[in-house]
Image 1 (cartoon, helix red, strand yellow):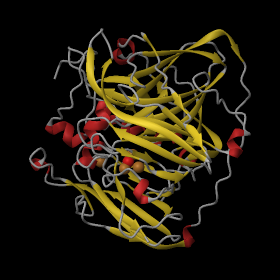
Image 2 (cartoon, rainbow, N blue to C red):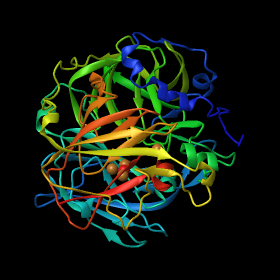
Image 3 (cartoon, helix red, strand yellow):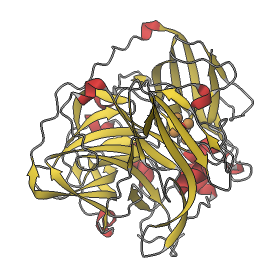
Length: 491
Ligand code: C2O
Ligand code: CU
Ligand code: CU
């Protein structure tokens, strides 16, 4: 247990959930500096920026070739860890695509075990979803095709193999996707990939002294989600990046197995949140701290015109008004002669008004953890509506083109990020209160705190399939693997 290279403990991570919501309402937060955590990790490695993969055109179809493979990755100290990646040894390329394009992704499985690859955030045919039913056998290639219906956004992809998602993502089978669209291309937002527009996959891992990070969850890991003591940005420990522009856009993805992050900057500076999971907000929102559960994305723009180095950090709340740094993810180092960026536009996108009256059905999803003593002995305990995932059971059948309200109630004592495939929904309210402006946008994952509830306005407008289901589940991967997942068809 104390094999950690950083000496951090997981002691305070769970408190991170307390920052949700309160961050935006509690006024200006005090950002403590006195943490061994942030100071302990030296910013010693240049940020790895995944290769950008725009595919290749064949007629009107954009085609990507992906290869899921075993690899060896050096994370620190000249030692190598066995890992898994896509077109590389750990994580995968950033796929870039445009709204309305037809795409095909050839996914070859070069592992010696089965895997899947799921396109998280997309409306797409069920057979193209890449969930637990779209198994790719070792040595074979799976070639889903779909039209990009989504607006400009940051999506992602990851293995979704029944019972092994946590292990696969921990090993590195995940990557990010950038979707562009016409309206957003006309906006003055930083969009120079790898210069002022950076994909940042946030993760934490637990390493042994030999530089490996085996996936061997304890009973506690199975219950809480596996949480590491070493933060990484795009697989880089102690990452730094030299910025050259006054504004920098970060496309943040919480790609961790089980950590809920409260993300801000080391000096407590405000920044602008410009996008939620599924696209741009109507207008930028000034925030000091944002809460992100596994699976969630947030695009932010930070102003570095003061020329000071600043570190993207996960904080924990130590009192109602004070937070303390826990994980330093990325140090931004502004160049002396940085160019001045155009200001962030005051209007970003047009979002249709919420219309709950249009809903013709309400479904309730009760998230619960029961019989925790049984954990590790068959992995029972995680339930949605008292049931566990069964590949043979369709839990819900939904009529296409109808609007529904889903009420998600968390009856357990820990937070759960509830994710739904094949849709971008809106948060109607949390415990009866309308969402904060910074999460009042397109979402596919909603973090529900212990004892709390959220209602989402949801619809499925594009595809039907009587047989092949989509998934809804908790995105804490150990919970998902332990059965906190269900299936629905759209007919
Ligand atoms: Cu990101 Cu069902 O998953
Ligand atoms: Cu998904
Ligand atoms: Cu959960």
